[in-house]
Image (cartoon, rainbow, N blue to C red; front, side, top):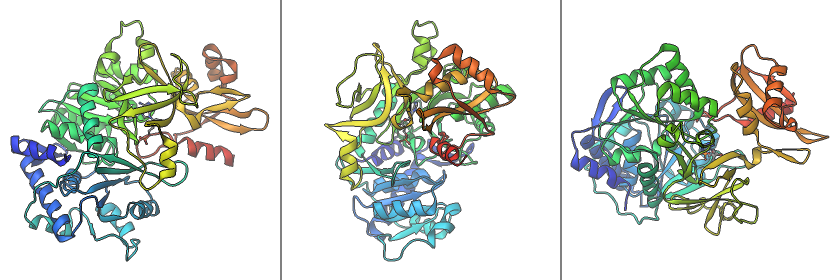
Length: 506
Ligand code: AMP
């Protein structure tokens, strides 16, 4: 088993089909993509002398050569270590060292800051920058056949964002990622040959992993010229390329929808927008559905079970007449096909329907361990179940509603308050654009609820009245901070840790 077989098969059966597009222009067909990957693989194996299982890091912004480097690595039986392009050089060095990477691909924009810092005498045998001579020379060696890997062999060593402590390397095998791909077909969407997967989010993360279903169908891959998320560019691409499918964080969905509304852009060129990675507020998904129609699918996952815990299908989202529609669109859907999902108490016992507890997951996509970190592994994987750190409740129909990360739950005067519930209420105010609710340490209550709000012409009393109308008195914010924008990470997730830090300095 080797993930690279997906590309081998696509290239054999459909060599002339367009594979990689740079903006709207076709850059490589499947034959060229496979051939180039096989040559880079050959270089890694024969010239650098890398052995199956060795790690190859990709510290790259989205790039037209990203896919060929991913596949070259698997082709040669090696392990991809994807590194978020927004990380600081010191964080990157930690990952390279921890993973003991033997080769590094780094895009030109990031290379200058890093190359001089690489320690001599480390495990690193070669550093390559696409577009530069050293990389081009890799094409001069003859191609090789794919190297056989066992299903449980490591394919993807993904470092979690690590809001607390050092990042940990999540170990995903070839089998895990095949299972994720199967779940895409059974739980997320079908893929047709003329579909186009556009990388509007970082290829080092879920958007990159979702290349597999599109390679499996020999469909198109579009790398936007901006390298990321730009609503105007996406709308243009939807018209030029057609059948666009993409992954977007909820904040990106909101921006895209607002743009489409503002310029009254046609939406026919979009096929599917998979969203997830953070909470999607009911107001926002309703607005998105109204503007773009049934083009959305939600997934809930985490690095430890990438993209694959639950899914809320386009049919669930579209079934407006279903009696449970409003609760369902506020949920993250039901368990994906190859995993079991439960909501448990601290002892690991399944809780009754609608009770809130920690979400645990078991199945084909769950990591085997954290890389060389048995202590963290034993805390997170218990009796075969992955403890996600997310709190949620499952209804009688199997639909899971996320509350919050367990560490984001606010405990005020002994009561648990789930920020998401308060955020949902504040989002109902027409002038509120974005909101994030956190707990502020308080001598009397333990913690008090505080809201950061983005919007125009707002005042605290209107928001307070809204909360009093919808939720228990003790849940309403004690303070509102009106801000220009919320701090977000590279994937569009609001950084509550930054907000807490801001509060501690006030
Ligand atoms: P990461 O490992 O960086 O992908 O972050 C995973 C975390 O993002 C999960 O544990 C959840 O807390 C959150 N998350 C992922 N998908 C969703 C979703 N659909 N709705 C709400 N939160 C989500």
